[in-house]
Length: 459
Ligand SMILES: Cc1cc2nc3c(=O)[nH]c(=O)nc-3n(C[C@H](O)[C@H](O)[C@H](O)COP(=O)(O)OP(=O)(O)OC[C@H]3O[C@@H](n4cnc5c(N)ncnc54)[C@H](O)[C@@H]3O)c2cc1C
Image 1 (spheres, rainbow, N blue to C red):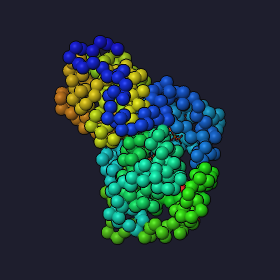
Image 2 (cartoon, rainbow, N blue to C red):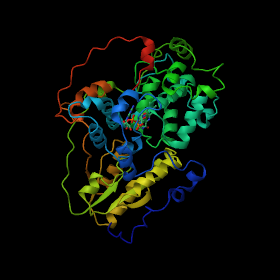
Image 3 (cartoon, rainbow, N blue to C red):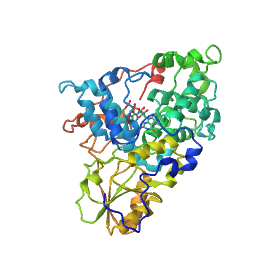
Image 4 (cartoon, rainbow, N blue to C red):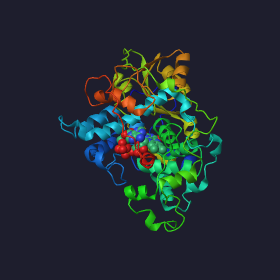
C-alpha cells in the first residue's frame, strides 16, 4: 500500500471495532456473530457447501443451508463465483442436481435488481396488505417482548435470542418470525425489517425488505401463515417440548383456515387501499452488459460495504492505486447496526489494502482523492440510493467516477420483467447455468393448489 499523504488522518484499519464504536459495544453484549468477516473465512465457508443435499433438505432447520449470506451481502463473495462453486458439485451432464441452490442464489440477484430500480420505495408497501386490513391497522411500535424474547412462546423467544446473539436465522425461521410479527401481532413489516437489519450479518434492504413484503402480502397475493404442524415438520419438537404454551394457549396450534379466520378480515385488500409501487415500473427494466471503463493514470479506489473483498474489481483495475474505505457513521446510526455486524465488517475491512477513515463518506473520499492529486475515483456499483447520492456528490466536486462491475450472475436478451421472480428466472436461468443467454422458456401451466397448501409455500 502506498504511503498516505501527511494531510490525511491516520488509517483506522487496525483500530478494533469496540474502540471505533464504544457506545454500541457498551450497550450490546454480543460482539461476535456466527461468521467471521473476510475473504479467507468466506472461502473456507464456500469450500464446505453441499448444494446437492441442499436441494432435498434446505427447508429443515438442520438442512444443508450454506450460511454464505453475509459474504454475499457484503460482496466478499460474488453470486457468480458461488454459482460456479456450486456447479462443481454436479457433473456437466446433470447441472440440475444443484438447480435449487442456483435458483435460491437468483433470489438475491433478483432482490438487488428490484432495489436498484425502486430505491427508497423499498421501504414502502409495494401493494396493499391482502388481509382485509388497512395499513393503519398495523402498529409502528415494535413490541419489546418480541425484541427481548419474552413473549412466552418458546419458538418465538428462541428465534429472537438467536437473532440477537448470532446475527443469523435460517430462511424458514425468518418467514415464521416475520409472519408472527406482522400477522399475529399486527406490527407493520417495516418495523420487523429494521429489527432484522440491526442484527442480521446479511441485513440488507434488498433481500430483507422483499422477504418482509412477501410475508406481509404487500408483494404477494396472499399473506404467509404457518402453524404448529408446519413447525414440527421442519424443526422437530425442539421448541414445543419445553414450551409453557405447548398444551394450552399455543397461538399456532390451529388449522390454516382457523388461523386465517382469527387473524384476517379476509384475504383481499381492504377497500380503498392502494400500494406505492406502479407495477409497470418493473415490467421492462433495461438489462445491459456491464461496461468496462478505461484505466487512467491518476485514480484512487473507493471500496464500500457492498464489495468488501480484496478481489474487488476496482482494486484489481488499480492494484497500485491508493484505496480508501470510509465507515459511514450516519448509516450505521440510522440502521442501529449491532456490535456483531460491526465486528463482521471490520474483519472484512482488515483484509483490504485500503486506508480506513470514518464520517461523511462523500467528504472523506473527496478529501482522499484531493490528497492524492487524483481526478478519478474508481469503485464498484451498488443498488442503494445512498450510493447514488455519494456518486453525485463526488461528481459535483469535479471527480470522474468509474464503475467496475463484478461478473454477472445471469444475462438476458431482453429487458427484465421483475414483477414476479418466476418471470425474471425464466429470462436468466440458462445463462445462470453458464450457457449462452437464451430466449425465456415459456411459462409452465401450474396446477391449482388448495388454499392451505398455498399458505405454506416458500420462497
Ligand atoms: C423476512 C425475511 C428476511 C430476510 N432478510 C434477508 C437479508 O437481510 N439478507 C439476505 O441476504 N437474505 C435475507 N432473506 C433471504 C434468506 O432468508 C437468506 O438469504 C438466507 O436464509 C441466508 O442463509 P444461507 O446463506 O444459509 O442461505 P442458502 O439457503 O444457503 O442460500 C444461498 C444464498 O442464496 C441467497 N438467498 C437464498 N434465499 C434467498 C431469498 N429468499 N432472498 C434473497 N436471497 C436468498 C442468499 O444470498 C444466500 O446466502 C430474508 C428472508 C425473509 C423471509
